[in-house]
Image (cartoon, rainbow, N blue to C red; front, side):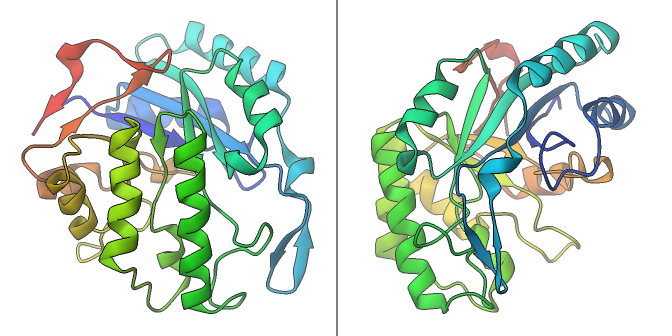
Length: 264
């Protein structure tokens, strides 16, 4: 089965540990023929996390260098398909910046929520769970309703940072229905999987509910910030997805090459 990893970070992200070239080499080594770089674009200028304030906006990469390096690597590693994308945080809060990036020739724009109340990183050391849930999904819903992107990343992302992350069915159904209505695809993010008992982001029960509500297409993303995590647990996760799911990838922001869409 040919699989695409549609969520990969590199040293163009402030928290990336591996270069683009290292990620390409790893993809060839483990047999993943399609990869998409989705380095962070974040305009939050005052992230509050464990008592520290960080200007994330100052860490955004140089776009011309980003495209240059992808094009260079495409010439060298032409046995794999290298796609270019971004992960844009809270796009509805930065409409002008999001419009600017949307005008650039990215293959794929991945929306995400990384902050609550404009600045607070959603973790147990920063904010109480119930407050974080309300604000996190309120922000996500606004981004889905007002912005055009291809997929929503790790929709229960704060689960990694709370002992519990118990979201009501009502809230989750509202998110999933809004995504389906706008043809925004669910990402199955495997960064949370460390052993056989772990679940992806979102949980399998949420993926099942997405399918029950009429969603069908998903994308896989390792969210790898270091090359050893590229394609993390893809084989085991694919076996546990609903058999009506279709795993795809985006090129030029549309689904391309139907013969490489993977029916489970």
